[in-house]
Image (cartoon, rainbow, N blue to C red; front, side, top):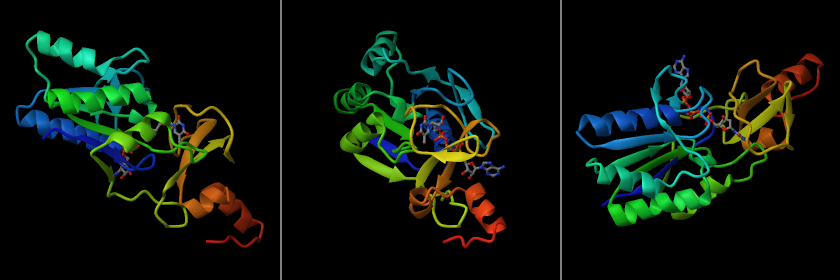
Length: 212
Ligand SMILES: Nc1ncnc2c1ncn2[C@@H]1O[C@H](COP(=O)(O)OP(=O)(O)O)[C@@H](O)[C@H]1O
Ligand SMILES: Cc1cn([C@H]2C[C@H](O)[C@@H](COP(=O)(O)O)O2)c(=O)[nH]c1=O
């Protein structure tokens, strides 16, 4: 039976790598799939993994209708067995509903990958709909870690190195880079205390106690 599976985790926990591996494994067994993404850090029409893998993908736009895309492929003699959908937090709730209908009505497997919550710990609308509709939500097994060593569960945004909790929900960016707007994964405790690695380092250097 076809499934809608949402593979989720913080930023930098291996989702895009797994998306590329899933596509590789299914294609290797002769299944026909389509690979989608939206606003990948590496640019449009591609999925990139921090492990160095990158491949061409179909860019999802506001007007993309997954049902239409799959029907068009079908009409052209290419029945689709599965979809790989990266950065799925950026899809609209309606697009997630289209994915669920493809599973139920056309027996297409849908493997969606994305973060659940933004830098304010609020669910992205697309991720919320995936959690509501998925047959399974799988949390990736590779743990990304907070600077304190605990499992990272939340995504923080930094502006010029300082953690912020207000701003636009969507700003494409990376962890650990030199860009003005960046991201860092934290455990809940340090997200709620707004304490990033550099914040903790600065406190230690000034002789203050850092609560682990
Ligand atoms: N140089 C490296 N050596 C080994 N593993 C790495 C290296 N760089 C990144 N990784 C792995 O890649 C993961 C990030 O993979 P990626 O697919 O880009 O994550 P996501 O899509 O979840 O943001 C990291 O958690 C880490 O395990
Ligand atoms: C937390 C958060 C993240 N984003 C963006 C930043 C990245 O471009 C993607 C996540 O990609 P990854 O492959 O999981 O690292 O999402 C955002 O726009 N808003 C946020 O709050």
